[in-house]
Image 1 (cartoon, rainbow, N blue to C red):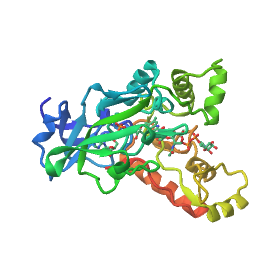
Image 2 (image 1 turned 90 degrees about the horizontal axis):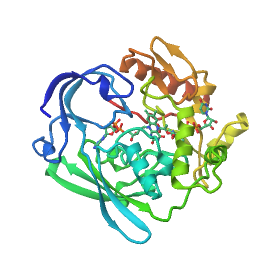
Image 3 (image 1 turned 60 degrees about the horizontal axis):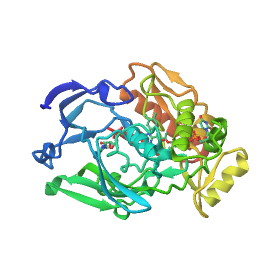
Length: 333
Ligand code: FAD
Ligand code: EPU
């Protein structure tokens, strides 16, 4: 596709924010990247599910449409799939579970592209993509060539990777290799999955059944961006040291929590935000979702700056009440 100028990005971000981009190029082939200079200001967009646009994008927008799935190698127990970065994550999950391969079933229905998945190490229902990623291949702007990082080199953490840190703005992910289990080990430890499987009448779960259980749970809990603008969880769940957590627990014995290890405990940001009275809050077209306090929403024609301002007020009130600093998950332009 030819370079387009001054187009609205509204269809390209799930908050539905209407800002213009100076220039816009669809990337259908790796060769489309070759002529772009390292110092060109750019914004890469996959599905726009984790993006808040607060101002016009005075940069070259690269819309990732790289497609294709190939088998890299296989043995008796595993299969390695190379998946182009513009493939839709949930469509890939359906393809994989229909083959009976394990590893990504708990990540069903996470919206977005395969290429964005390693950047924040997408996770849900007790699983993260780092458990399945073998390697990530990317176009490295400064050397104008493809490079690959092994799983270890990606430095994955909770909603984090090297791509959000040292590598920021230096790469365009072109494909991801996933190592999938031919003999799946199901992870149904997340309470709601067991309950949903029972509700579905499943007594001997398969990867496909787990994926559909997750789809049912998610459909109930999270707002669909096609109906109401949002980018999923706006903030990350904070981790507290054991001593800080113990003080909090003494004051709020009902606080939900998840031990990360012996020293750190994660608490749901949604609970903290709800306690501060934000759940269901609305001003103009901006609000906090009525069912999930971690999700900020655009009811129609909100500006990105208004969503940003609301997020700042939430950060401040959670800090004043609990002494906890919330960190934004959503990427902001
Ligand atoms: P985009 O929003 O387009 O981009 C995200 C960031 O990655 C941007 O900084 C962008 O510049 C960069 N980027 C994208 N593609 C590339 C590339 N190929 N190369 C280099 N940089 C790139 N996330 C979870 O982890 N778990 C969940 O359960 C979850 N649930 C969600 C539910 C809803 C309803 C929504 C709207 C979002 C949810 N998210 C969740 C967040 C989102 O789905 C993920 O972050 C997803 O990976 C975003 O994919 P995307 O293609 O839309 O990325
Ligand atoms: N809760 C509240 N109020 C609410 C919602 C939830 O108090 O309005 C409490 C409940 O006690 C609940 C707990 O928070 O038990 C956790 O809620 P939930 O299971 O809905 O998960 P979450 O912590 O809000 C995280 C991820 C989601 C992921 C789900 C399921 C983050 C930032 N968010 O949400 O990921 O889908 O768990 O695993 O880690 C995303 O990253 O965009 C995202 C949606």
